[in-house]
Length: 333
Image (cartoon, rainbow, N blue to C red):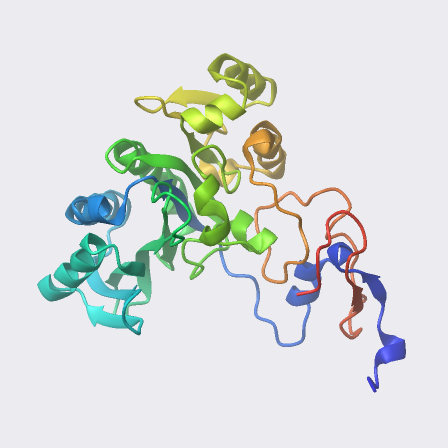
C-alpha cells in the first residue's frame, strides 16, 4: 500500500509539467547553461562514411580554431561494433582511427564518439557522435544520425560565433556527407549525444527517426538545413519562402537542392516567438510523435496544446498518472 496515496494529485500523464517537477525536486542542481549543438542525418552508408572520417576531423578542428582560443586537440574516442561487446574508450591515435574506419567499412559500427578536449582534466570538450540505424527490412540510406555538441566550451559571449561557424560547417558537409536534414541550436543538451531536444521531448531515437529523415525533420531550430524531400513536403520552395517570410524567417540557398530556413539575427537572440514560428513553418515536415512525458532540464520546445501544463505544488509527492487519457498520451513511462 502506498502510504502517500491520498496525498498524490491525479492527472493524465501528458498534462504533467515534468520539467517543473524535475527542476524543483530537493537538492536538484540549477539547470546547466545552454550550449551550441548541431544535429544532422546522412544518407551515406557506413563504408561511404569511412572515407570521410579524416575530412570530418579536419573540419571540426578548423571550426574550433575559429571559435575558441583554448588549445583543443583530439582526446579520445568511444565506439561499439555490432559483432563485439563494448563500448570502448581509447585515446585518439592512428590505431583508434583505423579501428573506427575498419568498423565503418565492415558496416558493423553501432555508435561512435570522437572527442576534442582541452584543460587539465579534459573539462572542455566538443563531441562528434554518430549512431547507425540497423534494420534489415529497410534500405541503408538515411541510416546515420549524427551530432556535434559541446561541454563547457563556448561561453555565452562566444555562442553566436560558434553557431555561425557550425552552420557554415554543415553547409560545407551537406553534399559530400549527403545530409538529409540538419539543425543548429542553443540548448541544454550537454552530454545527450545524437538525440536532439525534439527527440528527448518526445522520447524517441534514431531507430524511429532514421527511416523518415529523407522527407522529415527531428526538430525545429535557429537554423534548419532542408533538402528536396522536406522542401516538397512543405509545399515547394516558393511556398516555403512565402510561409517563412510571413513568420519572420528567411530561406537561404545551401548548395544543390539544399536550403537553410533560419531565424534572422544571432542564435542567442532566438527567442520563443521565433522558436514557435519555426515549429509552425516546419510542422508538415515534423515526424509524427505523440507526446507522453518528459522530465528533465528545460529544453527549447513549444509544447503541443493540452500537454505539459499542470504543475505539482512544491513539496507534493509524485502524482498518480493516468495512462491513455487524451490524444497525446500513449502510456506511462
